[in-house]
Image 1: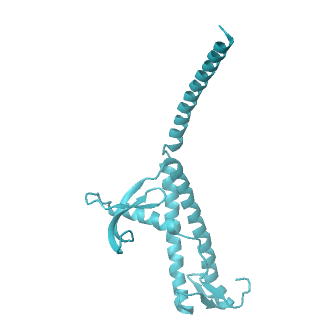
Image 2: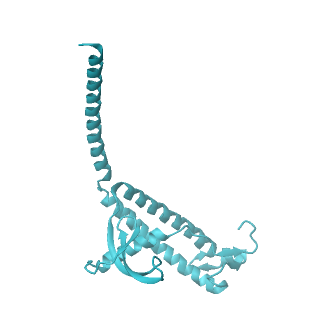
Image 3: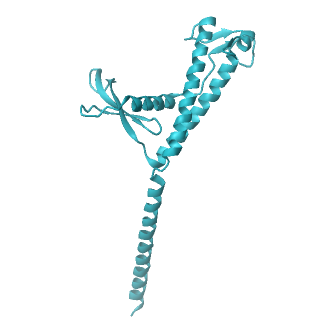
Length: 205
Protein backbone atom coordinates (compact mmCIF):
# COMPACT_ATOMS: atom_id res chain seq x y z
CA UNK A 1 0.00 0.00 0.00
CA UNK A 2 1.37 3.39 -0.97
CA UNK A 3 2.39 5.93 1.65
CA UNK A 4 -0.64 8.33 1.28
CA UNK A 5 -3.16 5.53 1.77
CA UNK A 6 -1.23 4.19 4.76
CA UNK A 7 -1.26 7.65 6.31
CA UNK A 8 -5.00 8.02 5.69
CA UNK A 9 -5.73 4.61 7.20
CA UNK A 10 -3.61 5.41 10.24
CA UNK A 11 -5.40 8.74 10.68
CA UNK A 12 -8.81 7.04 10.40
CA UNK A 13 -7.83 4.45 13.01
CA UNK A 14 -6.68 7.23 15.36
CA UNK A 15 -9.96 9.12 14.89
CA UNK A 16 -11.97 5.95 15.54
CA UNK A 17 -10.04 5.33 18.75
CA UNK A 18 -10.59 8.92 19.89
CA UNK A 19 -14.31 8.71 19.18
CA UNK A 20 -14.57 5.48 21.18
CA UNK A 21 -12.73 7.10 24.07
CA UNK A 22 -14.99 10.16 23.84
CA UNK A 23 -18.12 7.96 23.99
CA UNK A 24 -16.71 6.18 27.02
CA UNK A 25 -15.91 9.49 28.76
CA UNK A 26 -19.37 10.86 27.91
CA UNK A 27 -20.97 7.77 29.45
CA UNK A 28 -18.85 8.20 32.59
CA UNK A 29 -19.69 11.92 32.70
CA UNK A 30 -23.41 11.15 32.53
CA UNK A 31 -23.08 8.72 35.44
CA UNK A 32 -21.20 11.34 37.46
CA UNK A 33 -23.75 14.06 36.62
CA UNK A 34 -26.59 11.78 37.67
CA UNK A 35 -24.84 10.98 40.94
CA UNK A 36 -24.16 14.68 41.61
CA UNK A 37 -27.75 15.71 40.86
CA UNK A 38 -29.44 12.86 42.74
CA UNK A 39 -31.12 14.28 45.82
CA UNK A 40 -30.33 11.94 48.70
CA UNK A 41 -29.91 14.82 51.15
CA UNK A 42 -33.45 14.88 52.57
CA UNK A 43 -32.29 14.33 56.15
CA UNK A 44 -29.55 16.97 55.90
CA UNK A 45 -31.95 19.47 54.29
CA UNK A 46 -34.54 18.92 57.01
CA UNK A 47 -31.89 19.45 59.71
CA UNK A 48 -30.85 22.74 58.09
CA UNK A 49 -34.50 23.81 57.83
CA UNK A 50 -35.10 23.06 61.50
CA UNK A 51 -32.09 25.14 62.51
CA UNK A 52 -33.16 28.02 60.25
CA UNK A 53 -36.70 27.99 61.69
CA UNK A 54 -35.39 28.03 65.27
CA UNK A 55 -33.14 30.97 64.41
CA UNK A 56 -36.07 32.80 62.79
CA UNK A 57 -38.10 32.45 65.99
CA UNK A 58 -35.20 33.86 68.00
CA UNK A 59 -34.83 36.78 65.58
CA UNK A 60 -38.55 37.56 65.86
CA UNK A 61 -38.33 37.50 69.66
CA UNK A 62 -35.34 39.84 69.75
CA UNK A 63 -36.93 42.22 67.25
CA UNK A 64 -40.05 42.37 69.42
CA UNK A 65 -37.82 43.37 72.34
CA UNK A 66 -36.18 46.04 70.21
CA UNK A 67 -39.58 47.40 69.26
CA UNK A 68 -40.08 48.19 72.96
CA UNK A 69 -36.79 50.06 72.95
CA UNK A 70 -37.84 51.97 69.84
CA UNK A 71 -41.04 53.09 71.54
CA UNK A 72 -39.11 54.08 74.64
CA UNK A 73 -36.33 56.07 72.93
CA UNK A 74 -37.67 57.19 69.57
CA UNK A 75 -39.26 56.43 66.21
CA UNK A 76 -38.77 52.86 64.92
CA UNK A 77 -38.73 54.13 61.32
CA UNK A 78 -35.63 56.23 61.86
CA UNK A 79 -32.20 55.89 63.42
CA UNK A 80 -32.72 56.23 67.17
CA UNK A 81 -30.28 58.41 69.11
CA UNK A 82 -29.42 56.88 72.48
CA UNK A 83 -26.78 57.44 75.16
CA UNK A 84 -24.08 54.85 75.70
CA UNK A 85 -25.31 54.30 79.25
CA UNK A 86 -28.85 53.52 78.11
CA UNK A 87 -27.57 51.39 75.23
CA UNK A 88 -25.51 49.22 77.56
CA UNK A 89 -27.72 49.20 80.66
CA UNK A 90 -31.35 49.50 79.61
CA UNK A 91 -32.47 45.87 79.46
CA UNK A 92 -35.45 43.89 78.23
CA UNK A 93 -35.93 40.36 79.58
CA UNK A 94 -32.40 40.46 80.98
CA UNK A 95 -30.74 41.65 77.76
CA UNK A 96 -29.34 45.12 77.18
CA UNK A 97 -30.06 46.81 73.87
CA UNK A 98 -26.40 46.30 72.96
CA UNK A 99 -26.63 42.57 73.71
CA UNK A 100 -29.85 42.25 71.69
CA UNK A 101 -28.30 43.90 68.63
CA UNK A 102 -25.12 41.83 68.84
CA UNK A 103 -27.17 38.65 69.07
CA UNK A 104 -29.29 39.76 66.11
CA UNK A 105 -26.14 40.22 64.03
CA UNK A 106 -24.93 36.72 64.92
CA UNK A 107 -28.31 35.09 64.28
CA UNK A 108 -28.92 36.79 60.96
CA UNK A 109 -25.38 35.97 59.79
CA UNK A 110 -26.10 32.33 60.57
CA UNK A 111 -29.41 32.39 58.70
CA UNK A 112 -27.79 34.00 55.65
CA UNK A 113 -25.04 31.36 55.73
CA UNK A 114 -27.49 28.45 55.98
CA UNK A 115 -29.71 29.83 53.21
CA UNK A 116 -26.65 30.17 50.99
CA UNK A 117 -25.76 26.55 51.76
CA UNK A 118 -29.28 25.45 50.79
CA UNK A 119 -29.00 27.44 47.55
CA UNK A 120 -25.72 25.68 46.78
CA UNK A 121 -27.48 22.33 47.26
CA UNK A 122 -30.11 23.37 44.72
CA UNK A 123 -27.27 24.15 42.32
CA UNK A 124 -26.53 20.41 42.31
CA UNK A 125 -29.83 18.66 42.91
CA UNK A 126 -32.11 21.25 41.30
CA UNK A 127 -34.93 23.33 42.79
CA UNK A 128 -38.07 21.70 44.16
CA UNK A 129 -40.69 24.35 43.39
CA UNK A 130 -44.09 23.96 45.00
CA UNK A 131 -47.19 26.08 44.54
CA UNK A 132 -47.82 28.55 47.38
CA UNK A 133 -50.63 30.90 46.39
CA UNK A 134 -52.01 33.23 43.74
CA UNK A 135 -51.07 36.87 44.17
CA UNK A 136 -51.97 40.01 42.24
CA UNK A 137 -48.85 41.80 41.04
CA UNK A 138 -48.33 44.94 39.00
CA UNK A 139 -47.89 44.30 35.27
CA UNK A 140 -45.77 46.93 33.49
CA UNK A 141 -45.58 45.12 30.14
CA UNK A 142 -48.59 46.83 28.51
CA UNK A 143 -49.37 50.44 27.74
CA UNK A 144 -51.22 50.73 31.02
CA UNK A 145 -50.09 49.49 34.42
CA UNK A 146 -52.48 46.82 35.66
CA UNK A 147 -52.74 44.05 38.21
CA UNK A 148 -52.34 40.47 37.05
CA UNK A 149 -52.89 37.25 38.97
CA UNK A 150 -49.70 35.20 39.09
CA UNK A 151 -48.88 31.96 40.86
CA UNK A 152 -46.11 32.05 43.44
CA UNK A 153 -44.04 28.88 43.55
CA UNK A 154 -41.48 28.46 46.31
CA UNK A 155 -38.55 26.04 46.34
CA UNK A 156 -39.06 23.60 49.21
CA UNK A 157 -35.29 23.38 49.63
CA UNK A 158 -33.88 26.92 49.51
CA UNK A 159 -36.94 29.19 49.51
CA UNK A 160 -36.31 30.67 46.06
CA UNK A 161 -39.49 32.02 44.43
CA UNK A 162 -40.70 32.05 40.85
CA UNK A 163 -43.86 33.57 39.36
CA UNK A 164 -45.95 31.70 36.78
CA UNK A 165 -49.16 32.40 34.92
CA UNK A 166 -52.20 31.58 37.00
CA UNK A 167 -53.74 28.14 36.60
CA UNK A 168 -57.19 27.72 38.15
CA UNK A 169 -56.77 23.96 38.37
CA UNK A 170 -53.71 24.27 40.59
CA UNK A 171 -53.94 22.24 43.78
CA UNK A 172 -53.53 24.43 46.86
CA UNK A 173 -51.09 23.30 49.56
CA UNK A 174 -52.26 22.40 53.04
CA UNK A 175 -51.80 24.87 55.89
CA UNK A 176 -48.80 22.98 57.28
CA UNK A 177 -46.98 22.93 53.95
CA UNK A 178 -47.87 26.56 53.23
CA UNK A 179 -46.50 27.63 56.62
CA UNK A 180 -43.31 25.67 55.90
CA UNK A 181 -42.81 27.39 52.53
CA UNK A 182 -43.56 30.82 54.02
CA UNK A 183 -40.83 30.30 56.62
CA UNK A 184 -38.33 29.32 53.92
CA UNK A 185 -39.25 32.37 51.88
CA UNK A 186 -38.93 34.59 54.95
CA UNK A 187 -35.52 33.12 55.79
CA UNK A 188 -34.26 33.73 52.26
CA UNK A 189 -35.19 37.42 52.55
CA UNK A 190 -33.23 37.85 55.79
CA UNK A 191 -30.26 40.20 55.63
CA UNK A 192 -27.52 40.66 58.19
CA UNK A 193 -28.89 42.94 60.89
CA UNK A 194 -27.68 46.54 61.00
CA UNK A 195 -27.99 48.65 64.14
CA UNK A 196 -31.00 50.96 64.39
CA UNK A 197 -29.39 53.06 67.10
CA UNK A 198 -26.93 55.93 67.04
CA UNK A 199 -25.02 55.94 70.30
CA UNK A 200 -24.30 59.54 71.29
CA UNK A 201 -21.07 59.13 73.22
CA UNK A 202 -19.48 56.18 71.38
CA UNK A 203 -17.23 57.50 68.61
CA UNK A 204 -16.64 54.04 67.18
CA UNK A 205 -20.30 53.54 66.13
